[in-house]
Image (tube, rainbow, N blue to C red):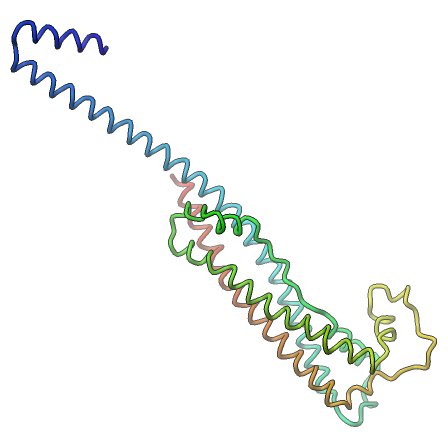
Length: 257
């Protein structure tokens, strides 16, 4: 084809048809420009298609993680709500006439205080996307902005979970070791209760701590910390729910194309 066009140019020059040659040359340039534009358009289309496909895969993986986190949050919220209720039920039992309370009930409520909540957060895909910058494949500005907020929301959860863990290790457990029989409680409620068995020591009345203002303060602090964790779970859940909705919408739009 190129040889054919070249032959035409030579013939026009040989016959001294300058006007026709110029018109032909301009037409040939226009054809070349059109060809280049078409090639660029095809390349842009291919690039966009690949980018959209990569974005679709990324958002699908983040969506799976987000849905798993939402299910985990539902469980954690139920558990911590139950713990908060136990702490509330325990704190109303404090009085000088502690022997009026049921021993098994008191042991059960104290046992619930030993739980330290932990949100099993899944984030490998999102962490990689944020650290590598491939989150930029996502076209939605609002979705990208909210995905960048997720690590801070999780750090807030970690902060309050750590408060409970630190209080458990530094305050609650040392106090309980000195003032109650943990074996009496674990021998009734722990998963290994059959292996622990009953203590051969003189029976300890764990209800005595219900007359101690120090332990009352610990239970009070537990209620505050459990409530703080619940608030951090709720904030994370709201952000995560919004992200799930945005991800589903973006995936739906890309699948239309």
